[in-house]
Length: 637
Image: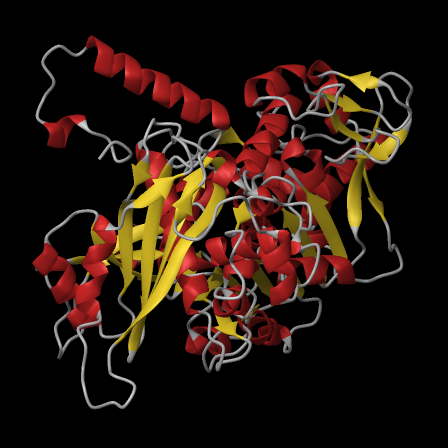
């Protein structure tokens, strides 16, 4: 049916013309942010905060969404911490492209499982959105891993390890997510550059990239620095001074989060820091958390380099409305206690972490890190020992380390078992020596915090990268749960530092066999970075060497500093010197984490003391203790 109306005057014609101008307005002239807010919603099936998108609560995301529709802007970068809605914003951008300019697009994620998860999550959210988006979603039977299909638009799916997917399709819009954890190894080269070449055929194309920075060679940081370097500026609710938001206070103790240290300069406990934290304005005003939300919502982007065509933005967890100043302060205290400042810098502050100095000379660390204990003895503040072996074709290196609160690490002993005699005419049972580490007993200089005069390693991890079958056979013949196989696993991330996988595989298909034998994959990158931080920071005394480390420990000291980080791994600077004892320390560090997870829960001194009080209280109350195997903890064995 066609509606009609009677026109009586020229004013009626003008009014009708105004209405028609709005109704038939081309989509590309409609506010792109408003277009998203009125059409895209989040589903309660896959999102923690479902409902219609409302950027009034996250105004900092408006500018990237607006720039996506600006044909004069071809490059957008967001460097940010975790838990800020980066993935949701990417989905908003894809919805905007469909509603405004349904052109070929490409979404590049780190791995194939990530691609499937993103596809399903996007479809589910579209089904909870307006009719225009809901009706464009294909039925499940027509969905595939080739592309995300919305009626009239195709967004190709690709992941960093697939060179064919990255090179095969042209696209006007390229969306690159979490680029710092892409696989940059192998023949496919740099996936970010490969993907961006897909836009060559299109005028007005746009490349959008976002990521949490990872490592010193962070690519997202490089793109941020090459762009406009925009930061969100807010006005102090008390004095009105406009300023960017930072975590660390400046030299005048202003412009960051305060209340973390006492007046005497001591770091507060997590609970105390969370309760006392507040923001300090550049003018010195105290801003309590009750002002945080209003202050953030009234901010604006300010470009450090406005003349640059590429636009870049920085966000960190202060923009998360669920995070108070106290929560961020407590995260910092935890990072200091557990030696994870690198992760705090990246995941909370959204910044690249750079080690303060290059690795020192081996002789300088031997002098700087020398502690009071001698080789083969244990300092009285050590709670437990771990040991690890690095297996090579012709020998096995081993190292024993002691651990205490705040990840304090004391190297106790080290050595090497040869596989062959010096003349090569006799083969020794070097692997057979590995289980004996479980029985190595070291004298404590006094009594340990648990009241022990001697200590033995609680866990022993043996590297299975070389002579794998022999190592696995040796371990399972020993049948001791404190002895297990380990190896580096570069596919893990910092939030999961170890995992198990089947040790045996079918020789023809390579598929895992269910034999019950396992290997622990270790996220070695985390522990390598941690060791580097301890070696390079002249004020860090958390890694300790025996007082008599020289001259016998010269090879150990040389290996500790003989590493460099490549694109995806750590390698010896001098192959002749090697890095075997350093690898042992990496595995021993992970074993220490495993023990803490099972006992104290974290590395703070308070957690160790509370765990010990509970242990003593339980032992006092118990009149008929259960069998020792069930009653004892990892530290009590």
